[in-house]
Length: 71
Image 1 (tube, rainbow, N blue to C red):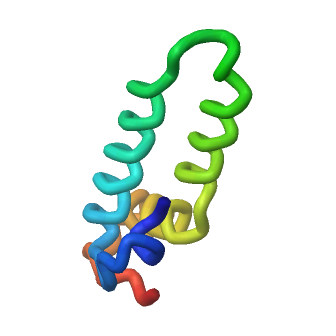
Image 2 (cartoon, one colour; image 1 turned 30 degrees about the vertical axis):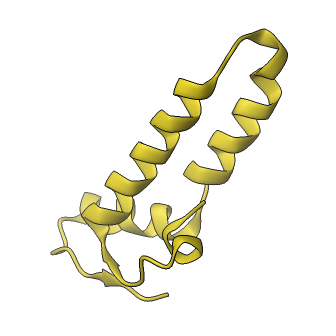
């Protein structure tokens, strides 16, 4: 679940990435074995392959100052 779905509102690029990594860690922590591998991978893709995450990474890689992400 991304920031928009949790009602967190506007977030900086760093906050977007920290929230995303926390969610990914939670999903990995819930992984219980090979039977759930496809479900775990699907959840990780949903968390990590979001436009707000990609844009935050691009801005940070380019060295732009952190800015709020518009929801």
